[in-house]
Length: 392
Image (tube, rainbow, N blue to C red; front, top):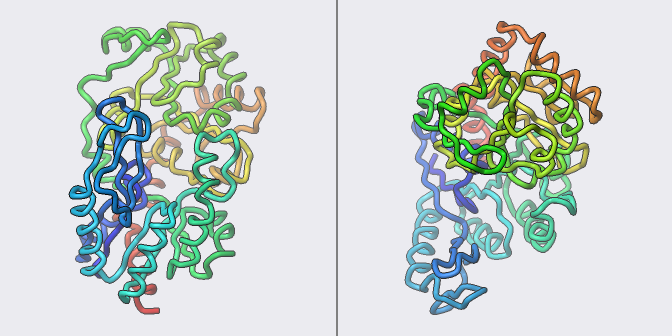
């Protein structure tokens, strides 16, 4: 098969839904290339952005929406547009990841008119975005285009049964292909030689100081973006209690809920900024956490759309998962601590993870994730699905 992937941006979702399966398909003899679905340009003068530039825009110059500085020229856009069109021409199957604009739908239609098969891959619930999510207005403004993209695709692949049910009203050919990791790559990644941790007041501390403070404590980790603010709030009462009753420290990677700074004593809270895709697993290996949090609020956005990826990552790294007792995580691993959305349940789950989670359970989880969420062992599912689409 000759496959082209058009992706909104090369972020963690792209890594999971595009790079991992496509790289595995490439290893077994299929051709794969990818290109950006749109250009996202930041202003070098004032830092504003990103401004999203579509393939069908024809301005001679593209200016910053804040300071009006030129941030991109038509010559640059034309070269990118040519690459996109060349990919469509030379491929049999076009995979779209996160189409959110009428211009993206137009590209789908262009590919179909050229006799290509189009697949959309979706790993989120773009319909039930809650008002408190920072992306609410963005996705509500673009929802008609998102829905049209599902309708126009020849087929759709999703990460969960809930997403299949949600999107089946727009497309009848939907395949569940759970998120999978490149386990060999994760195992080969060395730990980062330098962690670069911050304390609660955002003062940089040395690795030696961090290791000294963690000595004799269990390390509880969480990583993510501000979109998870409401999710973290579920666990906050238990975190406050745990910080005062157990020898624990908390490491927050990317985003830290403001309440954590108030309820966790200074010497027990450490912060780390967002890292690149390639540094993510090396950072976690360097931190050597014992327990990983995975709280999610009970909302259709999570209930239908969130995959079990966070606890799978924990399992592959030998970290004990403590997660919300929802469809998102129920049954995701053989052994894990599940908590209902109340202080007592989360506190008990944390304490059991600290005191009652044997080493053999950690290995059982690692073995399970290495089999069922290993892209090299699961790539046949993508191959069969894509071949079915091409043969339809």
